[in-house]
Length: 293
Image 1 (cartoon, rainbow, N blue to C red):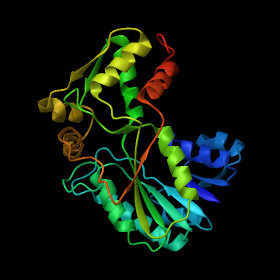
Image 2 (cartoon, rainbow, N blue to C red):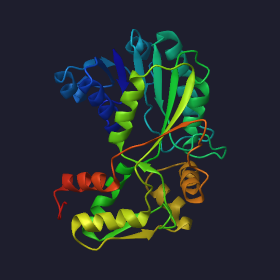
Image 3 (cartoon, one colour):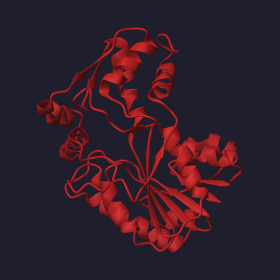
Image 4 (cartoon, rainbow, N blue to C red):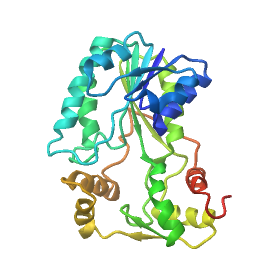
């Protein structure tokens, strides 16, 4: 049995699909069974548990050959990340109690960075669970290509996408969530000892200008990228309801300044096959707008 958290999301869903296609039994760890009804119809065993409920999560993981662990994102954490520290301690205790044969934790590119930023939440969790004696893989994927979903409307309606990634010709490591799921499923089925780190990015790095040009090609209209001035970021994020935008700003600084990147050896490095064109084509097709090629 393979337990998957986040099965109703892109990454968890892709992981579950890959395991089902490999003939594996899958247990979906969900907060609401009703929202995962289609997975139950597909043969997935559904278990209700929340990342904040140690007892329920322990029961969900117990008896499993492998577990895929991802935590819900927190884009507006309190200073010093108390939420992540609590999650880290709880997750470590759950894995120690449940004792699956092995675990894969979904972390992020740049988790090793020493500068505090939004991704430091994963650094805290990585550090806590790395002392586990069970075989553990830390999967560090690049920036999700699916973040371009926010750009579909602006590209279609105004021909301009706003970019916090800058300069516009800077190459950024990105990856499709489907590639993350396929990789996670493969890692879950492997045998290894101790702790290892696996880095994952797409077939080529991507610039904001390339994102715009890909939209232009797929929508058959001019689309350009436009820099969002750094001085306006705090005001923008607070207007969106954020109380503590500094970690998010520092994360973006890290990508733009280059100190958020892959760690390199001795970490393993994997390259996915799904391109930016593939992802944006699918995102645009969901809106059924423009020319899709």
